Image 1 (tube, rainbow, N blue to C red):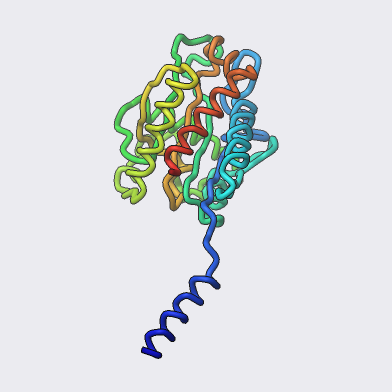
Image 2 (tube, rainbow, N blue to C red; image 1 turned 120 degrees about the vertical axis):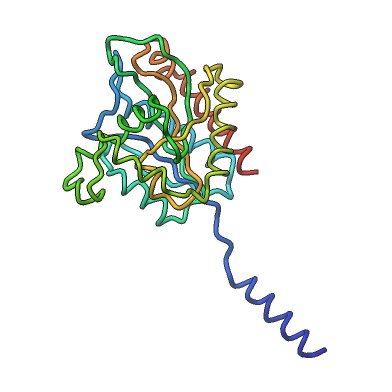
Length: 251
């Protein structure tokens, strides 16, 4: 009996001494610095991404005291794609969210395309998904020695994306679940067109070791959507929608 009590006390002592690790959320505002991202009529993608990321993070900080929020950037600075993933891995993140703004090949010629999309890492056979991944991944050409850093990966070559079809994402189920919640909230809370959840070969998601998703907030070369995303009302609705999705996923 004495030995049993001793072992119980020993186990309890370890439970008391070992601190509980806080749930960690890493928020990545896509692009930044010399990488403006997609261009709109009056704004740049990097600025929209940052404003929504900061507003979303503030909601989490104010309402979820048990969640540690880490930002890959809080200012207009350039950060390599692989460094964004390393930030998440170093902080042992439980969820990684990369925030972006979409655009079509038409650029400032304009588009009628509208709506939000959320991506997870995975199969990307659909041509339109591959096109989005190529556009977002092209930022690595601004990085020094990107051929060596990304092991010969060419963001413009379809052959380079074959590796994503061979990778097994152990966090796929959780990633897809979160992505679905985001899309639901964009539609119900922000009144956006829900274009759905997709899978694509985004480099920023490839090296993360936790559930992760990349959000496309809307089309910056659609005048109406660009105006909405740059408005105070638009920022509030979109950041709140992402927060609602996170809160539901976290619970």
